[in-house]
Length: 423
Image (tube, rainbow, N blue to C red):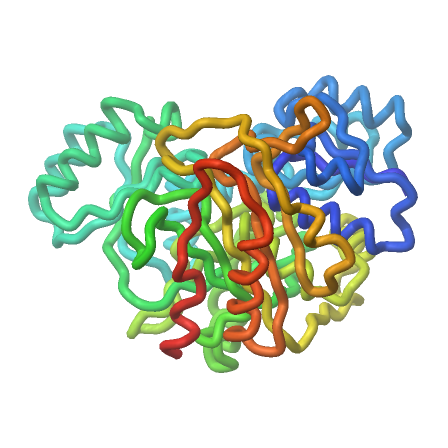
């Protein structure tokens, strides 16, 4: 099969690596890809939002299967465009990708179908939001309604911070049009867990659990980022939690989307908070999490292409997902100054240290090739993932491997998976 992957980050590199293991994959393309993906796929210079060019390329090259990795093209309707052109594509249609594309929609969906989540109110008028906050219990969480690269969430400890947050999101439009509407949500406490799933419109199959670290600095301090590291599985995702979520969250979400005439085919990411009152949904994503994919997919035993095709064909009930009985930890190597401002173009050395190292991976997130060298080309540059018999061993291996590579102005958190030691 000829397979096209749409995207350019660490998630797409992890997807490409999983696809490359399938005997069904004869040729892999990635648009636009990055320097690391280019080592296992042919990168084509087409942007993820250039729908016409992507459709034309897929038809010209007789692509058998397209996997859309990124949120923007999914929410924008790339799957619809490809299906209309008679192409086989994996991912939710536009009317289902709204599960991630609008936080207001997803909150209203959970409320309507009694899916556990935090109490909330939606606003499209900043003055009404400010008036509501005058009587709200602090702290609160403010969320830009639309896509904001994982950064459109503000945790406000005081009323003054909340007022400033409304200005940031709705008036100054720091997150662009994503802030035209805003969700004000009660602040929940507990352990966070990320759970990825495959969905075929009616059947849902859960992947191994994970936990992301969103804040830029050690100790969960600093600004929200797209993710500074992950571990899988989560020791806090117990059999009891799994049973509750299957009963009240997972299938309920799939059924709710079908009932709304928005059947979901693709990957649903469940961001969960394990509260004193039980698990609740923090957020949905309509695709693989990044960097969660970098610790979950390397542990999956199944043929990635077979699972993806089962989702498209509605035969996921015939698939038994299987994961290795081990653990994985990913440490993100970022550019100093991320997520605000940072320099690009620094040469990355030591990448060959990962060659033929079983259980070690270096997923490229923001890299490019320049004058025959691989250089930094983004805020999150590399995702260094390592496996281990236990989470502690995987964590030690990941930090050991992180020292194998170097680039100027490099930054990483030193406490990814520290919660493991406290479990």
